[in-house]
Image 1 (spheres, rainbow, N blue to C red):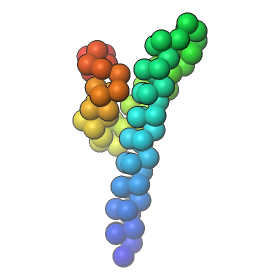
Image 2: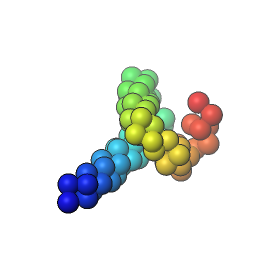
Image 3: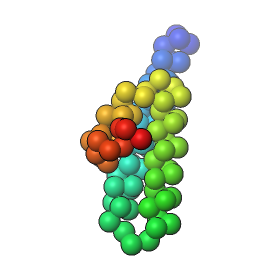
Image 4: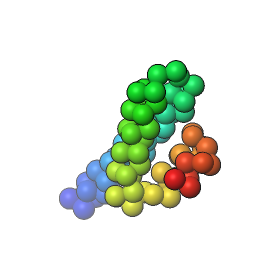
Length: 78
């Protein structure tokens, strides 16, 4: 039973990290049209942090897909 709970918790954590990345990537894409450089920098930094969190738990492929859809292909080469 405990093993099942651990798998459920891991799945919830993965969903949380991917949703967080998607939210920040959307903010970063929106911030690119903004005239406030600090906002763009903050949005990019938040996106990178969320991406690294995803990569650290083995979700790099999924994270790259989110960035590709949200920000575009230039994010994949960074």
